[in-house]
Image 1: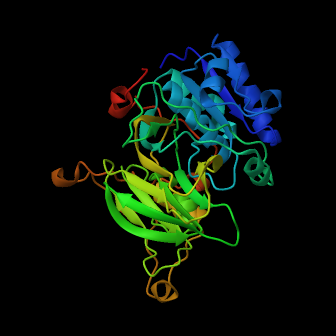
Image 2: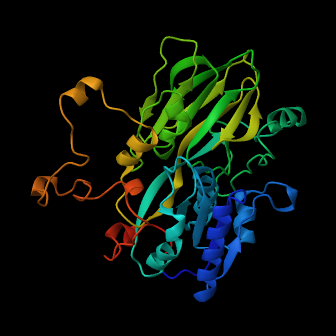
Image 3: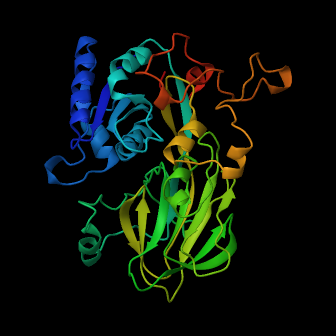
Amino acid sequence: MTVNGLGLVVHGGRAEAVDAARTVRAWAAEHAVPCADIDVWNDGGRHSSDEEVAAAGDPDLIVTLGGDGTFLRGARLAAHSDALVLGVDLGRVGFLTEVAACSVREALDAIREDRYSVDSRMLLTMRASRRLEMPSDVEDLMRYGRGPLLPPPQVRTDCQEDIDWGVPLHVVAVNDIVLEKLSRDRQVSVGVYISGRLLASYSADALLVATPTGSTAYSFAAGGPVVSPCADALVFTPVAPHMTFNRSVVTAPDEAVGLRVLERSGRAAVSVDGQVRGILEPGDWIGVYAAPARLRVVRLSPTDFYGRLRERMNLTDAPAAVADGTPPPLWSSRTPPPDDMAHLSLLPVGLLPAEEEPCFEVPRETAKDDAAAAPGRS
């Protein structure tokens, strides 16, 4: 890949992130690649993704230096400009990031030499019955403990407003879109529709729609299922519902999820990837659906998502199972899979989980076919 522009999203509160940023800038200078910091806190306020990308010169590679929160910021920027995103892991959970800080120079070399593959991840967008706004009294309330807020999303100019289908909002969600109560002493009441059909009316603390990538975030904490990030699906999960049916629902990627605030409900806040973006009044609604764009994540080695899940979530084995034997960490096949299994994704034998390996070593094979076939820049 010819890197014509590089954007940096840095967690400025971490010394190791600041040090890694110096390494990235030095690499960019050596290869005559324009490198711009994307500072969402610039001028004391938060800016939209379009403003941030424009200020960075529309980079075709965005490098995030921090944890998963920093990655989410960079991923939204990458989605807006159809750029690749490389996550450098400096956080505590690290489901989204790819390489250790000590390996960032080797990772950039691998990208420049086409020794990488691309994960194509589903994103969410939404429409609403009206433009989202943040009333001043609510903004002061929601600001507490959250820091400066992002502005309400703008209306998309490539889609028309429609009486039935609502206002197309300029929203890209990597993890989830959430409708949550504002008042601590009153739940929000919401009618939930899937593919236009009423599923049920919920009284709950919140109702969220997650991507497979976001299934291990808020949805997981609320009791939702773990979904492979390679899948395409929407995961609807109620949070603390006052009803018997408290299960998640996993829908097909072409099935939209509608959330309508009932007439005598309290007001509800709309959050996108954890950032409050507007307030809905009783009678308002949002429709959440798969975005036309995809997130393109750089991968430099096979992804051991389930090994990372076991380690990050501290999964333990049943005592009875431990007493009956110890399974190997990987499915122990020593030969290539037979023809009827050749299409399956299986980790190579001997691959250690990323946490057990030494500092990242870039593989020397050429880029996989999916990198060449991925939409957008090459």
